[in-house]
Every structure is written in structure tokens, then in C-alpha cells.
Image (tube, rainbow, N blue to C red; front, side, top):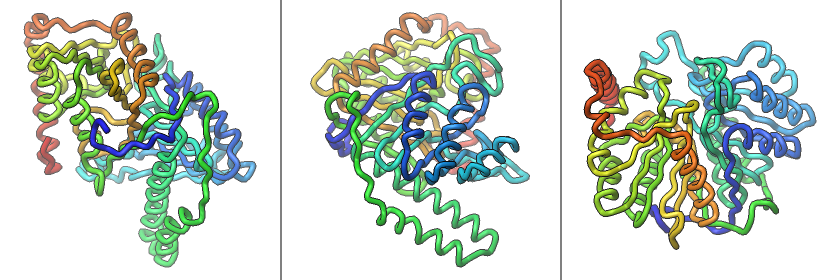
Length: 410
């Protein structure tokens, strides 16, 4: 039980790379849905392939499947009017998590976002990972991409599906209750709160199996929220890295680990574990790009290998440890290793202890490092231009200031 979390061995888990692999599997499951679809995402963009997911949701709702869609108020915001009208007409139930008020992100409590990407179909199949509803070759801020975004998700069946469904139900009914209470419809709010448990008690969802997913594997769903699960994802990483004997490979889009994670990686490297990081190489956002760089020095000094992904945007949040040993560990999810994910956002990762799954993920990450990654040279890092070092320190300082404002320690 590497990582200190209970894993059940009744799962089938299939790795999916990019929207190119995820969306067809997701749409196939939606088109076969008979009772309900629960869907949460940070970004829902209707450009290109994203529209096909929206159309699958509408097809399901139109034939009577209860279809719930939750998007984040920052990542997506208000849905485009034309699409919102189509979704409503088809019967899709849509809700926006924590819409921004007049002051927007100036209010620290607005920094708590819905960042997880989850979909449960008929209570029997789960999709979880880092992939938004966003075309692989499109970026809302940068336009058309020359190469696909690098990201992962999983398709899973087994007992973890009920856990995902429960947490999505709880959020849905809580959001409905808050909405009704704000409109002073107190009886409806009370009814919505009671409906959360009633819906779960009434549901007798059969656990499906995937004949193409291989033999059952050990897996679990690890959640992060601001109530009961404040540090579970970080602890899962810390314990797995602490138990590593041969190799740690992490691919993470926005990498700014706190002191505990940095020390865990440094200690692993110093005891002879080969530690490799595949990180964002292209400039996307000022804070994420520059605030991460000041932490690289200690890692490079300890022998950690850092590769920057160059062809397109890296958006993955995955790791694999000791894939070829008798204790393989892997995780695929939505959580970055930065303070926004680990201290503020709702996140969801699937943890898998299975050799075939871990080897598959490892092969894809090693291929990306070898063919699409630029290894960071410690000497070149130390000698980077003064202007870049100043920007790095400014961004790092701003991040620390933001954490101080929230009252968090990282």
C-alpha cells in the first residue's frame, strides 16, 4: 500500500493520452448512457473537438438521460450564449462553480477553484485526468498550436466510480442549495440538501467492466478539497516518493513544489534514485513560468534531471515510480504540484498500483523526454541572464505574498 491509501483490486484502468484518445472514449460512453451523466471540468471550450463533447451531452439529455454539467467560473466563466441556449433546449442541466463577482479575483476566497476533470456515466465508468474540454490543437489565449497539447486521463471502472459519483453529487446539490438560498427560496434549498443523500441511497449502480482494459488492477481515487481532504494528494506524492527505490518520473504543467515536496525529491536523488522531471518549456503565463524557476537550483544540485517540453504546451499532471519493480506506483489526475492546486483548488487524481499501467505511462513519458524535451543544464541555469533572474524572483515573491494573504503555509 505505497502512499498510505487504501487501494481496492476490483478496477480496470486504461490510460488515455490527449483529447485525441479521451474524447472518442468519452463520447462513446455518453452515447451509450441510459440513466445519468455527471460532468465537471475547469475549461469547456467549444472550438473544434470540444464541440463534439457538447453535442454528445445534448444527445444524451435529449433522449432522457439526466445530464449535469459543472464548469468553473474562472476557467470557463459564463457559457457562450448560443451554446448555453442549445444545451438548455436539449435538457442539459448546467451550473457555474463560484462565478466571479464585480471584484473578480481581487477577493482571495475566489482563488478556490474547481480544477478537477471528472465524468461519471451511469454510475459505472469514470473518466479522470488533466484534460479539459479543449481541442488538442487550440489554445484560448495562443490560438492554433503546431503540435498537440501533452496531457493524460484515464478511463476506469470499479469501486472508485461510486466515490467519484458521490463527491460530484455532493458538490452539485450544495451548489443548487446555495443558489436557492441566495434567492431566498429556503424550502427549495433544504430540499436540495436532502436530495444529495436521497439520490445516493436510491441509486443501485451496477459496477461495469471493460473487456478491453485487461485484468483487474489496484487503484483508488484521491481527492483534494478545502474541508476533509486538504492534503491527501500531496501526502500521496510524498509517501510514494519517500518509498521510491529506483526511479521517479514526474510530468507536471505548473511545477512549484513546497518545501516538503522539494526535500522529498532531493532526498530521493541523494539516496541513488534517478529522479526526472518533465516540465513546461513554453511560456504560457508569467507567474507559472517564472515563479517555478527559483526552485530548480537545489533540485539540479542534488542530481535531479529536469527536461522542458518544447513542441507544444505541457498540461500533464502525472507521475510514475519504480514501474519495473514489484511495487509500481502511478498517478494521473488534475493536480499540479503548485500552491494553487495543493492548497486551494478542488482536485482529483487516480492512483494505480499495476505494472502494466505504470510501464505504459513510463514509456510515454520517457519518449517525450527523449524526443520532445530539452534537458536543463545546471551551468546554463546558474548563468541565466540577469533580467530573467529578476523576473523569476519577482514572480516567486508575488506567489509567496499571495500565499501570505490567504493565510496558507507551503
